[in-house]
Image (cartoon, rainbow, N blue to C red; front, side, top):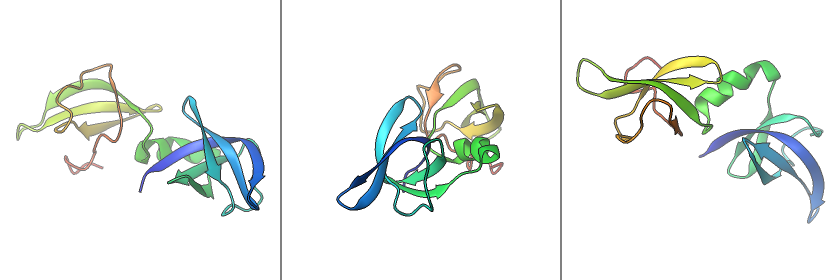
Length: 123
């Protein structure tokens, strides 16, 4: 399962099913919208494997960016007391500790996808 967050920029029927184009970051992706109630251009949606599964309230955007595959900017890299490579990443204004054990090449200023915040138990 790959969850993304985006905004509907166009809607259209495709083979009798409501579809649309959704802006995800800087990219535009075709997504099926049939599971949503009255989707409109401008609605923010949560997408799973090419299907919009839920509309999202604007105030929840920061939370969704935190748990989705949206990029996170590393602002600091360090090691925890057990020698695990850790860092601090900015999630749209929210700074969280992340595990970088499986991304040894990442350094401060880089953007990472899916950095794990579970390693430290502070998720």
